[in-house]
Length: 169
Image (cartoon, rainbow, N blue to C red; front, top):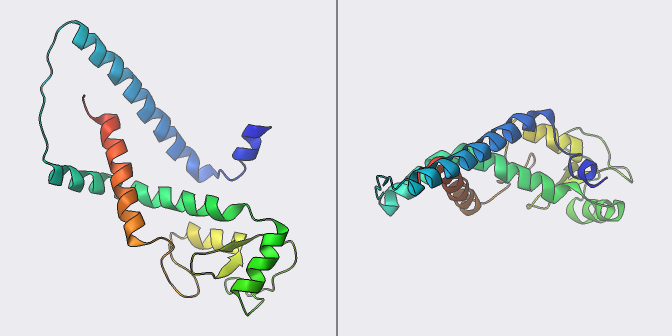
């Protein structure tokens, strides 16, 4: 019941990412046991200190590609669950035109729509196809879906998580 409801948006394209996540988690698990075993034997490890500036650059470089996927996932999740009432209000408030500029068809009651931060509204399937082309901006005004600050923050967060998974502690 609950699992099916949570996975209704998972496309087949995200399965390799989930597989990579599980492999990284398994690697981290095995690494922890190996390090605990070495520590119990009294084997000291080599510790190197990386300057904070170098860590920032490393985290940003590692997380740059993955951060876009994380942000895209957040954007899709934030816009997916709109009720019919929300759809009608979003269409009325955000658009003087009742036509989707991507597919050029009229909005109908009960259509699933996505409202972007710039307040433009599109059919859910139309905007998903736009994102599938890796276009991370509004189809109408070309404004970015996410601010540069959010992208930089996501790059650092994802980069630090990936580096911590594969680093020797």
